[in-house]
Amino acid sequence: MQSSRILFHNDTAERILDGNHTATIRYKTYDADEVEVGDIASAILPNGGVFAALRITRTAVLPAVEALDLIAAFGEQYPSESAEQLLERVNRYYEAEMTTDSLVRVITFEKVASEGVDPSDGKPTLEDYKKRLRYRLTPSS
Image (cartoon, rainbow, N blue to C red; front, side, top):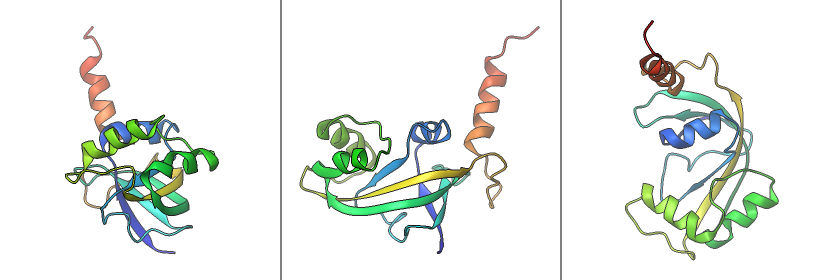
């Protein structure tokens, strides 16, 4: 078992914290290449802040068109409902164009910690941002 880091965008981080996102699909990225089943991975934001610890439960490499079926078979949650939505979603994050035949890596996980997860580099976590946003949106008395 090794220590790994997996990058997530802020919108995905919120769904992970809420328990509504338990799988990720990676295409031509190296941040998650080394994760293996049983690893505890730090879930990080684009600024490097850690927002959760994730236990890797399954991994598989397969054509993108099959990724959602595999995620559903595993009983995991991913926010796309069709291969077209998946391609659109994933292609937003990558410079290369992924097609239905592109090989992707599906990684499923369970959140094992979010409260009290401290980024080792002192960068703010997603929870810090949420608290600041709630503070700014709270009307003054």
